[in-house]
Length: 214
Ligand code: 5GP
Image (cartoon, rainbow, N blue to C red):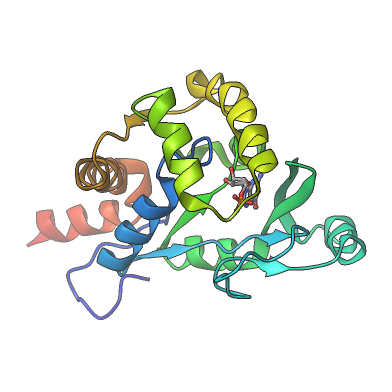
């Protein structure tokens, strides 16, 4: 619900999806927004890809084996799932459904395939944002600066980026990430506006009735 505020209007949470080719700055933008907004929580995906240095189980991902992942698909425990760079990735269903019902918003860092599945399953709850890098050179520079992946993986991700970027028309909003601070402000503006949509303020009828009755 909306906490202890007696004036708070009951609302339904939304699903804010951020997608981009890797290296466009999406992870940095997500972290910044999450740290500044107590009503927003991150959806932590399950994946079969190996853990990278510095990644934490349960914070960055739930790292699981392929057999376990397939079991979760069969038990319908994932809201969506897809193969990305040869590994399985998927969104655990229960935490998302609980958050939305309680009026909290959920942030997703998932690819276009997952976004398509969420759109089919829950169009009304979905707000999708595609983040583009300012240039190809900058994208390559950012991927190399990470230095967590091998040259081969960087090359593979550059090739994949062009493909990934072709999906921009499927998204509600497009943000070109020239500067992190400006992009964060833009995504926050999207979130603020989408929270104010009439359909999401499910308690608004009751509130207006109260206003009219005095
Ligand atoms: P990375 O391995 O760099 O963490 O993520 C690779 C790609 O997988 C990113 O584009 C990311 O958005 C996507 N991804 C991460 N989690 C999920 C998920 O649960 N579902 C889908 N469809 N894509 C995901």
